[in-house]
Length: 489
Length: 33
Image 1 (cartoon, rainbow over the protein chains, first blue to last red):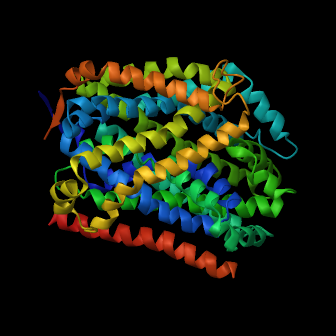
Image 2: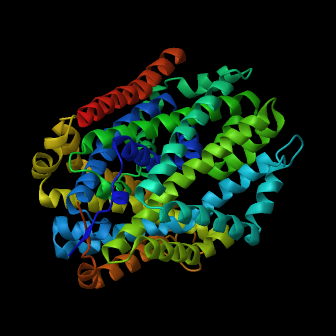
Image 3: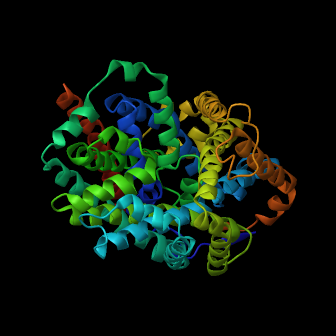
């Protein structure tokens, strides 16, 4: 059975697809995580490792996702059934579960960004403000958390209910250029801050010790997994709506480089600003994502000359980046329901209500959000592994020759062949994260309840994954039966 | 030294993106033809 594609169900042109794909990839991870992780892991050495990770990790995975979407014309669950066979439907379902686990709390993060934009616009962020108290007051207030989460979800529902062209594409045509304009403005503004050069010097000094340190590579690969969106099934979902002639490899590479450019621009704003004004810049960049953005940077925006304009631009960029990623994640869920026969409106509301219901605990408890971020964030490595195994099951050369090469202007087979190495990166990086987590909870690493006590244990990760994987395997046949409405061109 | 590194990183990131966007423009021109 198949669904006929209406005019509103295909990207209107290639720019529409590229901007939507970039919007999917560029999120808060570029603006508050990339500068922090790159600065604390070697700066120049990190950039080398990160560019390497684009080729070894992100681009081949995204290319495989593009094939899944374009060939199957189904979302993440149905595409596994079509591409790998009925018995693999559970793999798509597990990938979807991992990403939905992120959708549920990421809506809360979008709400935080909106709250801070409102703080900046309404003049709350001003000289003398205690930003630590401001953050604790907000993050400790469940009512505010829920209200701004609902506002974020309302915006997402509005955009997605308008369809692929009228909603997703139209929003990304505005949001993505705006993100880059704001980041370029911020990077240029930061360059004129007296003392900014100290930040550049720290950021770009090449240290051989960092270059030789395995941790630099592990952090770079992890950042690539979390930032580019490779292996999440989002690129896959957007490729359901492409024309048959669309170039997969070029789109994947463009998305990855645009994602890197956004993170790099954010670094050119954040690091010089912190080094110019912060009394302890190293502590500021090591303060975690929210600590750096909502406490240290906010403090600087409140105190420095012209900081208000910088603050508004920074938080606006953060909101747009967060929103353009959240809509991609929700669209992933919407496409799955469309494959099961739901119309767009019904599918959008179903995913939105599920997101609100499952996101509420994260909106009301920072500990629960941290736990979910840990479990499903690391779960993305597993999601990427499933994608790479699926590609190897079909045959990497076969996929290249039949589905990528004929329409590609970037005919570099080696770039796709590198997907073979993915299981090696998975073992190294997942092993490293597991090893770290064991050391955080000596003797108790396998425990998982209560979550408030065992927030970041290996146990909480494994148990929640096992429950999700068990459910997906048990429901394999049922899901395979349900996924029957392909988008027909 | 850091200035050279900064220039090299900018060249790779923005040069790479610029080249890919230029490739996309060529593809779009082909599609329009």
